Image (cartoon, rainbow, N blue to C red; front, side, top):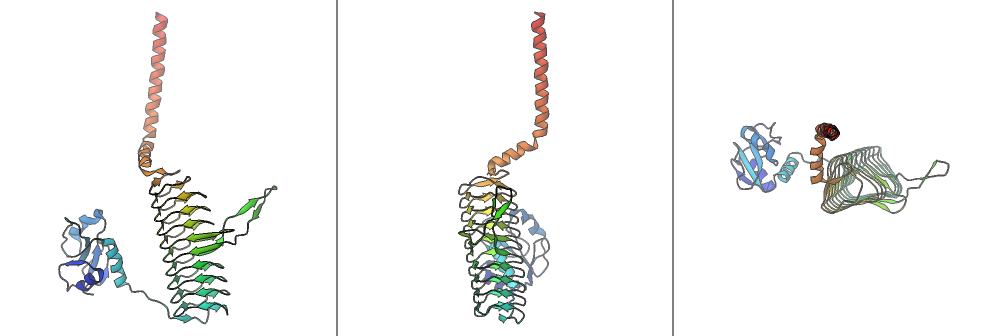
Length: 349
């Protein structure tokens, strides 16, 4: 593909030879002739001087560097990179239709141009939207509803009555609508299971990573709102409500009946206790334990989580605790010595 055509498609300003042939997008340290690379983080700017790439996507800010190759200038180099990758990796889709080795209930509905792969099971009364792709070995329970233009990868399990919106992607091993963790302790110490028959609703444009689970509650619903992106190995418990455009990194766990506001970001291995609210636009740092409500716009870190700025100061102090302990012991000993000397002086008088 000619560089000028890429510039037009990405709506970037071209600086250099537009007749260059570009064959792929590559990382800046691995790029060779014929490659398009990008720099969206200033820490990689020094590598521009030695890159072998034929062209690079760079920011358009004043004072931006001029590398020894052609440049595509843009206000948002990271998004331009994402679009560039899609130019060189066009999506492939299986043929439309229902594979003869699938098992589709007689009263299930399959939309126009949907693709149902082999060994897929679709339960009674379920519906699959137009152009949706269901890869092999997916199980869709009775009464479940899947919207248009979705992609369900192998081993995903969509339990009974779960509702999935349009343009949703479920990666391998996702489970929607498994039983919430609800038990009532009995007088004899045993645990009585609370039936979990509530709803699970996944709104439009949600993506859920591999082996993530979203549980249904006993009553009410668990909801993931539009535009939210969930990483691998994330657990969303029963009755949780997740707002719009939320980002949950790997191994996040959210306990039951918690509300996550719009545009919240949670880094990897964050844990959130139940029955609290995390406000809109809040950020939770990696490995944090959120045990109290988080205000809108707050940035918290730690276990238990508190203001990130305070956590950074505390972490510096924590590293110095051994030396501080030693100094404290020395000071205590000096006080003891001074008290003994003072007592001896008073006795001599």
